[in-house]
Structures are given as C-alpha cells and as structure tokens.
Length: 582
Ligand code: ASP
View 1 (cartoon, helix red, strand yellow):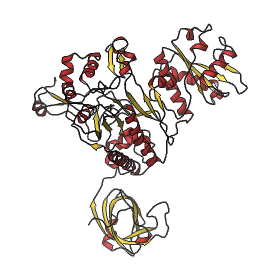
View 2 (view 1 turned 90 degrees about the vertical axis):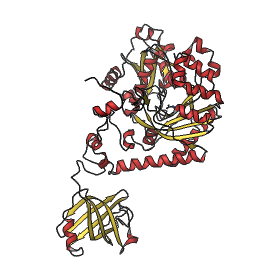
View 3 (view 1 turned 30 degrees about the horizontal axis):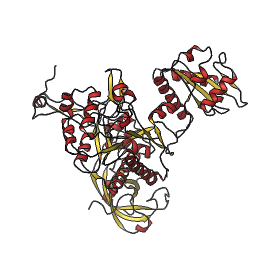
View 4 (view 1 turned 90 degrees about the horizontal axis):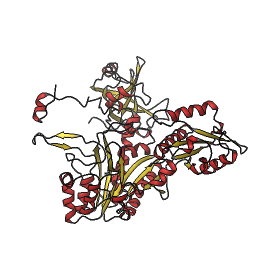
C-alpha cells in the first residue's frame, strides 16, 4: 500500500495514529537536527518532521538527500503541532517520520510549484504537467469536472441519452475550415474532423433517439483569434418533436440549474431580444447586459444642422457614459485616439459633457445649441454628469465601433463584475449572411437551420431579410450556446442548398446521406450546442478558457509541450499517399 491517507485529510482526530503518506516534496526546511518537509498530493499538504530525537538515523540520512518535487512515501506518527496553522485543513497536526522511501527523484522544476509561480505562460505550457501540480490549474480542472458532471446529471435526469458520434467523418460546415486526415487505405481520400456533430445528431433524431447530448470535442481550423482553441469542447444537444420554445425552456433550465448550483445565483426568466434589437441597441449580437450604455440613434436630432460629417452619415449613434463628464480633456483625447486605432477604425468621435447644472458642453458647439444637445441626451438616456460619445458612418461599421467603445468603457469603469450573471436569449437571427469575399450568401448558423416559415417567400426577393429559427444564449457578453430548429424535409433542405449556391449534384455529393435520411420519416427536430470551455471559464470567474483545459494549444495552434504539429517522415507520408514538394 502506497498510502493509508491522502495529504489533505489528517486532523486532530488522527493524533497518535500511525499513517503512511505518498506525495511530492513541496518545501524543505533543514535545521540539521530537525527537517520539516511539506508533502503535497492532489488533496492537500501535510507537514512531516524528521527529528534526530525521534526519527531513525538512516531515515534522517535519506531525508537529507531530498529535493523539491521528489516523490516519497513516508510512514510516521501523527502528533499535535506546536505552532498550529489554522489556514490549513491539516494545520493542527504533523507527522514524525519513522520510515521513508524515495519513490522517484526529480530535477529542479523550471518554475516554482506555488499558487503564485515565477514561471511565465510559455514555460508553464512547455511543462504543463508541472503546472497542473499547482493549485490554480488543478482546481480549474477539478471545477471543469464538476460542471461536466452537473451537466451530465441534469440532462440525464431530463431523459437525454449521451451518444458518441465519430471523429473521422466528412465535412460538416460550421463556417470554419476542416482539419483533414488522409486515408491510408483509400488513396487520395480524406476524412474531415467534425467541426461539430451536427449532421450526426440530426441523424440520431431520424433514428428515434429523441433526446441526445454529448460532451464532445469539435475541431475548427480557423485563424486563431485570442482565446480560441482549434479543438474545443461542446455540450451538444438535439431533441425531436420540439419547437424553438421547447428548446429555450429546457436549456434555460440547464443554465439556471448551473448558475444556482455552482454560483448560488438564482436568475428568474432569461430576457429575450431579437437579433435586430441587439444590433440596434448594443451594436452586437452578444450584448453584455450587466450594464447600460444602450445605443441612442441620433439621425433625427443631429442631421438638421450644417455639420457635414453627420449629414452624410448613414447612422449617427451615441452612448451615455455614466459619470464620465468629469473626464479631463486629456482623457477624452485618449478615448478619441482609442476609437481611431486601426482595430476599431472610427474616423473620429464627437462628445457632449452633460454638466451637473443641466447645461451641455460639446465638441460640436459650433453647430448644435443646448436644445439640440438636450435631445441627444434624451435619446441616449444621459443624466447630468454623463458623457455622450457619438460615432457616425456606415450603419454596421459604426455599430461595431460603438460596441467596442462601450465594452472598453465598461472595462475601464469596472462595470463588468465577474460575480454578476446576466444571461440573455438572442433570437430571430438572419438565415443568411452576405459574404463580401465570395460575393454570395452563406448560412449564418449552418445550412441545416430552418427559415421562419412566414419568411420563406423572401428567399427569392430579399434573401438577407429572411429570419431563421435560430437562437443564441449569451452570458455576460459571451455567446455560450447557439442552435436552431432544423429543416426536416428534403424539399426545404434542397431549397436551402440552392440558395447557398450548391448545385443539386454538389448537395447530393456532400449531404446526400442527410437528404436521403429525410425521406425515411425525419421528425421535426432542433437543438443547441454550448461552448463548454467558455461556460466553465465564465462560471469559474476566469478570463481565459486555456485555464480550464488540461493541455491547451497556444495562440499559433501549437502544443509546445509535445511539440505538435510536427513534420512526419517520408515513409509515413508515402503510406498515406502524400508527396511533399521539396
Ligand atoms: N452545431 C451547431 C454549432 O456547433 C450548434 C447547433 O446548431 O446545435 O454551433
């Protein structure tokens, strides 16, 4: 037996017992006649003492050879500690060593295995297994496990069945590139790794599984944006015989359950907002509604004077920043520089200080009088003491810029409290999205999403205006889930493929299996998928999903620990029928 107890469980009730512990050497204090060792395992830390008076000589000798992170097994007696440490669960006791086995030696770790380590991100990722010994990482992984268990239990209780779907498949379009796997046995042919199990979960509905879920890896070969992983985990779900309302109810239930159980936060009904409204009032389809600063459109009250910038703009729109009338000229200039950064891309910013005495002072006083500015204040909901920031230009661009400014200001004014949770359903997404590069429409969600029946006639006349039975669940400005009611008949699916620019042959080639399945009694169905990594990181109150992934990739999609991706040798390439030009 390597151990009788863990390093986290012994307390005063164990005094006088003989115990055996195994673990890593966290810390050594050597006074010569007395050596204290902190022994660590996943469960905690227990203090050992090696004492000339009470520990056999050869054991004492061995203890002198210990180094940090050595793996040892120690047998000894539990005694009451003289100077107790109330901050530690094992702080009332210590163990007088009687025997020691060095199970393995260790090199000096390249960074300290402490909560506050001296190791930077790169080195910690290279030695991730050492990083995982640290409490913050270990606790995050344990937290992830707990959230996963709660999800599994909840869904299972609701009658969902977890079914595994294959990883070696054929392209399932979710808007990213596929990772491809060459087939050795089928020369010149490739599998694609799933961007999601979308088509399979729909086939499970045709198969009568009724309620499916899976906590599953998905793979998307995207240009990596901050805090994205090329492989990530979804809670993927699908249900048969449901309408949008059924899905929203069930998964609002799941989210409420998690918030209550994990954060002790009870949220009433989740608010709902249409995509159009989200874009109009927050310039964003995943608004953070923990704070205000709603957009006020100002075309009606700003385009009647001689100010050309506004008069020629498609949209003039502002937000009232709470309490920011006190910003100095310098601070405002900095803000203007911020919106002009290429990442944001505004050409400038007009501002209005709403003075405490009810008067206004703006950067465009030359054009607008107090009466005009009072109307701007009304439209943006500005109070005395607020600062109105106004941007103008093409509608979509300007909304995106003001949305970025709103988030930036919320960050600076500390309005994004990680312990506050504001979920929101965004519904009625457009079915199609115009893509400038390819000059055609793409499915905004994916090609299996059903249009709202009443909008189908618009497919031929105004495709961009067709709304989908599609919804996102947004939490604190993050899209944590998204899904739709699916098309379940061959005709509508064929119509959709046609509008996405697939010829019938191409559609048959790629998705013939699905169109075929729809001819064998496909039930009406729909579903949703949650981004599990993101959900866990929000519930865990951390910024990045990397913190909750055992072995994440870096921003260039590399695993720096195992050094992947890597080249492969010629023989292996030949086997998979791939020739590289050298
Ligand atoms: N497969 C979709 C996604 O990965 C989710 C869904 O429609 O259920 O976003």
